[in-house]
Amino acid sequence: MRYFFTIAYKGTNYHGWQKQPNAIGVQQKVEDVFSTILNQKSEIVGSGRTDSGVHATAQVFQFDFSGEQKDAEQLLYKANKMLPKDVALKHVWQVKDEAHARFDATSRAYQYHIVTEKNPFAIDQAYIFTYDLAIDKMNLAAEKLLNYQDFESFSKVKTDVFTFNCDIFEAFWKQEQESLVFHIKANRFLRGMVRAIVGTLLDVGQNKISIEDFEDIIKAKDRNSAGRAVPANGLFLTEVQYPKDIYL
Image 1 (tube, rainbow, N blue to C red):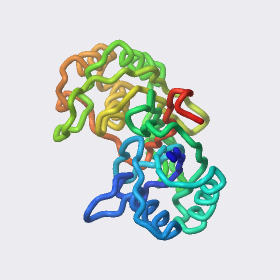
Image 2: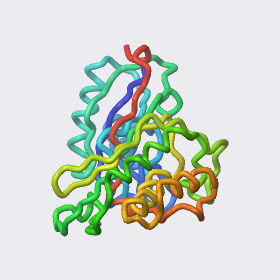
Image 3: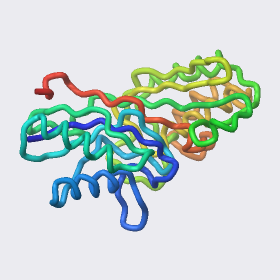
C-alpha cells in the first residue's frame, strides 16, 4: 500500500532534500530510519528537490509498504523518535496505489523570509536585509510574473529540464512588523527560480531597476539579465497540493 507523508525540516545542516553520493540530504536520513525500523531497505520518493540550506514546513514523500493504517501511524511515531531534531514527520495518509508524490502534485508553494532589522535569532531562517524597500513597487512587479510562462531568466544555467515553462498562480509580498515575506505558488519551479526572482525584486524595491525593466528581464530568457540569487536560508517550501481523489 502507498502512503504520502508530510515532513518538516530545517535545511541548515543538509545538502537539500535529495540523497547524494558525497553529501547528506534529508531523504537519506528518512530512508535510513525507515530501514532500521522495518529491518529492510526502504526507499522514498519526494515531491521535488530543495536546494542545500533550504527549509520545508510541508514537503511530501511517498512510501510503499504492507500493513494497516495503524502501522503507517506507528512508523511515523517511531521514526520521529529516531530522526534528528531538525527533521519531523507531520502527517501520513493512505493514497491510491498509482498516486505519485512528484508527478501528481498540482501546485507547490514557497515563502521567502526577510528580516529588515538585525536579529540574531533569525540568522538560519531568514535573510537579514536592512535597506529601505519600496514594497508596493515590488508587489506591482511581482504581479507581472502571472502574465508569463517561460522563466528561463530565473533558472540556474546548468540544469537539465525539458521546459522552462511554469504556471505561476500567485506572487506577492506581505509585511509583518520587521518581517517581509514573499509568497509564490506555481505548478512547478525551476532550480534556483524563487531565489533569483526574490533577488531581482529586491533590485526593484531599491529602485535599481524599474517595473518595466523587471518585465524585460522575464522576456529576455537570459539568467545574466536577472538579479542575484538571495541566500538559501530564507527559503521555505510550505505547501504541496494534490487532487483530492488520490486519497483513500
